[in-house]
Amino acid sequence: VRDSKLQLVVSHIRAFPDFPKKGIVFRDICPLLKDAAALSAVIDLFEDHVRINYQQVDLIVGLDARGFLFGPLLAQRLGVGFVLVRKKGKLPGATVAVTYDLEYGTAEAEIQEDAVAPGQKVLLIDDLLATGGTLYAACQLMRKQQAEVLGCLVVIELKELQGVDKLKPQRVFSLVQY
Ligand code: PRP
Ligand code: ADE
Image 1 (spheres, protein in one colour):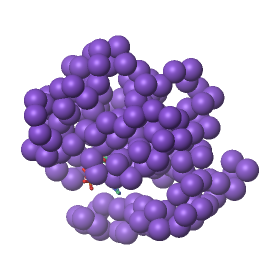
Image 2: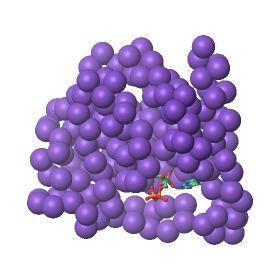
Image 3: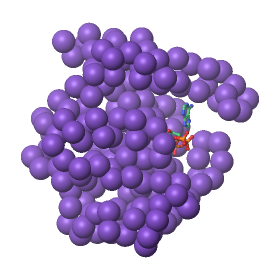
């Protein structure tokens, strides 16, 4: 069952060479979102992983923007809340921010100061792990807020960019690797 779900996921990811810049192979998850069974398979696989590996999860924390597509679905399955880490300037009220590097640029990530409470156990989620800069920044934000990061979940891991090493000692779970 697990293998057939993974097959379904893999078959709904497209590659676009030289987007958004020459030399980048962009992994497009739009077909995955468009297909109800494939999207369910993603959430099923994440849910199984979380239930097997973690006793208690307090919140799912999703990364702007594509982490928002999967995070709330998983959070609902687990019966927990969802929190947004956004690109800077999008969140109202008191916020905490960090700067980070991307595979193709730099950016700033921000969270509402009251989004997570000290000691809360959180899982971070995004569509894709490249250099790990984005998830690393989110981990820093969680540390600033004294939340406990249990691990990171991604649909796709780009192995050659070694994001897993950048995120150590955090654990990373990916469904598909390139
Ligand atoms: C992409 C992707 C991840 C991040 C991964 O988002 O969705 O969030 O890059 O790269 P990294 O591991 O090198 O940090 P992007 O910043 O392109 O923004 P978007 O989700 O708004 O398209
Ligand atoms: N984010 C960073 N690198 C990416 C890639 N190669 N494909 C899709 N999203 C990305």
